[in-house]
Length: 212
Image (cartoon, rainbow, N blue to C red; front, side, top):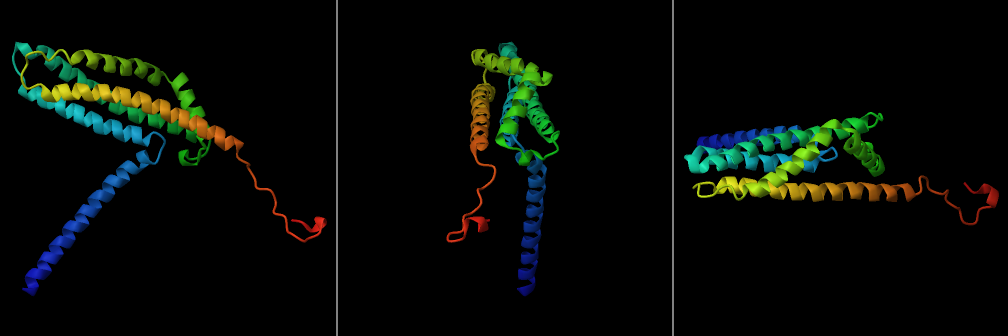
């Protein structure tokens, strides 16, 4: 019995160690992303786009026939758009971080006003961002129209859900980005009004010349 108990204990300990190492590996992979500005946007985009790609791919594996030609096209387009959104999310974060770190400081050490200024520079002058604005808008409006293209094709529920996710993603990211940028600007204004150094303390009862 003691031998069986020890074997079970060793097996559980081994499983626990393996799970812990797996979790640590995942954490180490995402830490450089989540600790930087726009980390939530990047990870959130990846999660949503994985769902969109999986739903569209599942639909492609199930639907057949001429009635499903339009639905099939929507699936292919959304898989492509999911890849673009995922790549651009990471690209935008790297562009912002590299712009911040050109100042010789880590992104985590930058003030809100500095982050807002660099984000504004990327939005105004980065060619990739300018192109993506049109892709982003096109993705939103395309999926709004795609909801009516599934017609009588059976088994397109996952693809319809994927198109709906793309619409919600467009609305969510637009509102989140506006709020994020406004928060950076407002916090930057608050930072600029804070005193940069504290006034020297006054020692009660000490002569004026002896004050520190």
